[in-house]
Image (tube, rainbow, N blue to C red; front, side, top):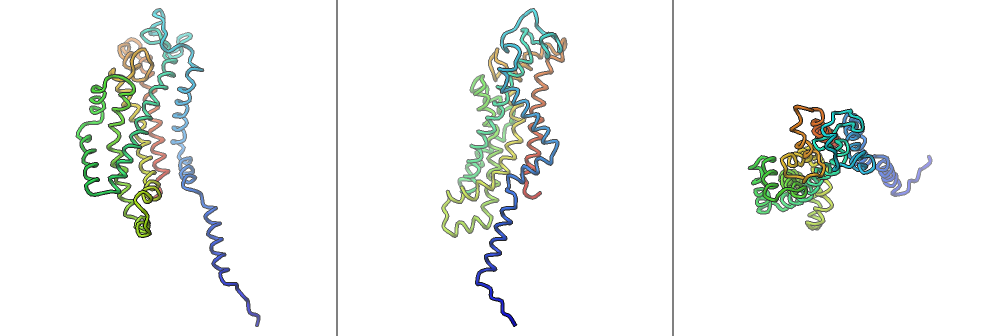
Length: 304
């Protein structure tokens, strides 16, 4: 009877090699998220619309047919489809298409920047509160609860009035509105992560607080925080445009969608289609961003 000699550790090496090969074949989390997002056709179309609007705003100096701040009184309030003015003109004879394109260069960044800054500040406060716990958590979370005593729109208006009119002040006001909810989302996610076994193992192995936060907390709370922050982009554009509509945003003659809607509201009874154009841009952009946010949230949900 022939005896088969097996080298010690050969089986273990085969198992390790199989595990490495399986890990190399398995897609990364980013690839999984992208694959899930692509299967959501509505979200893909909405993302295309949002990117197209952003691209048109970026290319405004190249494709705008007229100067957005120069008008002609003889051509004021031209209707849609007028010769040379596809979207008509405003009350000062300025081309609305040109002002829409240039207005996106203000409205879109002014809507994205508050969410980005609030995600950084609110996320940092939430991680600190959730990881430290105790009195630190109490003071931070009760401090953010103060902002919940005021409706978001009223708080933004109050801060803008206190700081004065201007795009930068509008961005500060909207940022302050978004910090508390993002802080709460980050705090809740951090507390949930800190109860996991891998965090306890890291503590038992001697990892300090900074290492645990860097290697275990931040990576695991990024998905819920980013998903929630993306849902605020459309709201942010509406809030910034609303502040400009009330005269708390850009200063004339600068083009911005909310300010354009405010300046054209007097002509809604005489030439309604012209006055609807900037409002339609706010609606389309915010709706597209909301749909993209929903698709991104579903794609990043690991429970699916």
